[in-house]
Image (cartoon, rainbow, N blue to C red; front, top):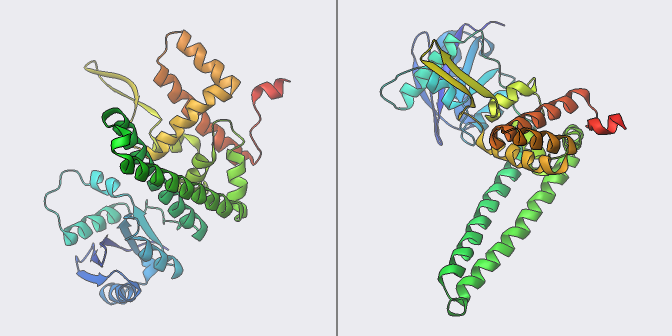
Amino acid sequence: MKFKEALGIDVSKKTIDVILHLNSNYHQFENNVKGYKSLLRWVKKQTGLSPGEVLICFEHTGLYSLPLAIFLNEQEILFSMVAALEIKRSLGIVRGKNDKIDAKRIAEYAYLRISQLKPFKLPSTNILRLQKLLSLRERMVKQRAGYMGSIKEYKCMLKQKDYESLFTVHKKMIHYLSKQIDTMEKETLELIEGDEEMSVLYHLMISIKGVGPILASNLLVVTNCFMGFSDGRKFACYAGIAPFEKQSGTSLNIKARVSHFANKKIKSLLNLSASSAIQADPELKAYYQRRVENGKSKMSTLNIVRNKIVHRIFAVIKRGTPYVPLYQHAA
């Protein structure tokens, strides 16, 4: 069915502001199921169109937009959920900001791309659960690192015998957080192993040297079990490890560099993965050492390794068989 109208929605914690593109009719609803039902009745009354004829578009705002996405998915109504930065950059220079204006800009963005925007596929319940577990683990890891950093500073500046209680509390917090992190990791693995699709993909990924449980788990979430990316090149771009050159005439000629528009968490995990791989994988270790000995930059070489790992991941997922190193093939 072709869309005939676009509806922009600005999602807040308690309300959603909506506007239709063609007639600019505006309304505000509660950000709950009651409000969503009122929204559908209002759209029908204002346009005379069925929900399937109106492209519903809103920004990805995490917890605030999730209930709306779940409701529309349950009603089998197609919608598009877009990154806020994508909408912001597409509109060029803009002035003024409030919820109504934001909804209008989203409606304009959607209408201009009414035949191009793909319906958003809501992740499964297990993927959403996995995402929450990983987010909680990440917060606890950061908290633990904060306490560990504080103790390190205290040891340099303070006499431990004079501040025994201070050191004791910090050590107890580190111990407590470490236990909770272990618990989260066990729950994460149990969740993955209990889902057949996730389990298969997870074990394919960790068959690659350098790809550990945390990277593999996060990749399941950000790729939506590899349904969100068709190949490794697109994912490398998303992760910010694909180099792009800048060249124009004779005045601008900058060598290829990675973009700062990236999923920084995935980029960081891939960096750790590459650092591990050049130690554990003979092929990648030899490649890294050879380039460095030839005078190539360590960071650019490490980035190539990151890309190799990404392409290996997508290769084993597409093939459906674990990774087998080249030196084992030769043997």
